[in-house]
Image 1 (spheres, helix red, strand yellow):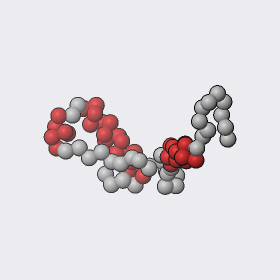
Image 2 (image 1 turned 90 degrees about the horizontal axis):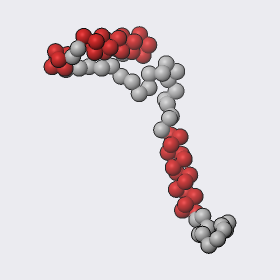
Image 3 (image 1 turned 120 degrees about the vertical axis):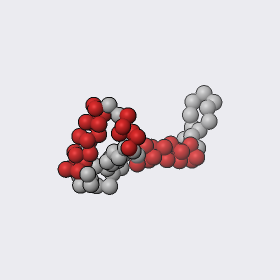
Image 4 (image 1 turned 120 degrees about the horizontal axis):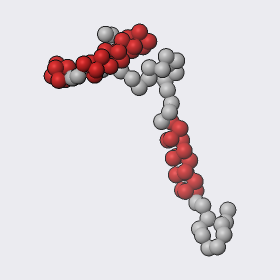
Length: 77
């Protein structure tokens, strides 16, 4: 495989690096086959100090998140 105007031909190393980069980017989206969509998510468990300083809206969002996870993903509340 040659190229135009004095540029170097693609080497096996270059092709290998390109193939590795493509496989790595595709592997980043792999899942364990769990159809519930729970991969990559977990319950939020703030410390007592975090709860004390959190706004009411943030506490509501955390509770909502954890309830959803308990119902859909089987998390312990």
